[in-house]
Length: 234
Image (cartoon, rainbow, N blue to C red):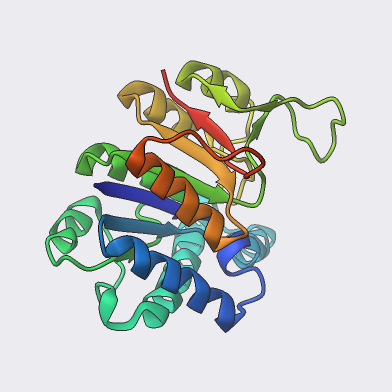
């Protein structure tokens, strides 16, 4: 099976802890023994800091996007280094490059691709293009909420929702470089358009990502009490 896994920079690289990169690499190596894995790394806090500095000195949004893409690729290179010979040696810089790299049988790790697309959108496009069975968005929140749970105590978490419901929730997100949302609006639109089965989950534990992917493999129901995030399906 082919899985596309988006790992947020706020999860993977929040403090550039080398042990965290090693743990995620070990998890991905284990998954890759039975499955094809494509990983897209986000930029996280570092990308947002670079982007905000660029804005303050007068850079336009396209330039900010390019800066953010560079940071996501740096995070990808760190994960590649942790994976060693198990990874394709460099981050593909286009969807076509990712398809070609996949034929190597290695774990593919990449960052952003073009301005105007977050790494969530890159993941959704790749999931469609490569025919992935599942897309996992491993982020710093435990799923999709009706409102921002950090500012709205009455926010409701969705366990299961349709792609249309996801799109309705996230469409109010501001579309500019460095915006924060569990899933950005363009990615949500692609998920709806292509009906990509997706799980949005707390990715702060690499073990939880492993459990979610393995549950999908055997089509089992999640074990009660485990964090499984929000499943998006028709």
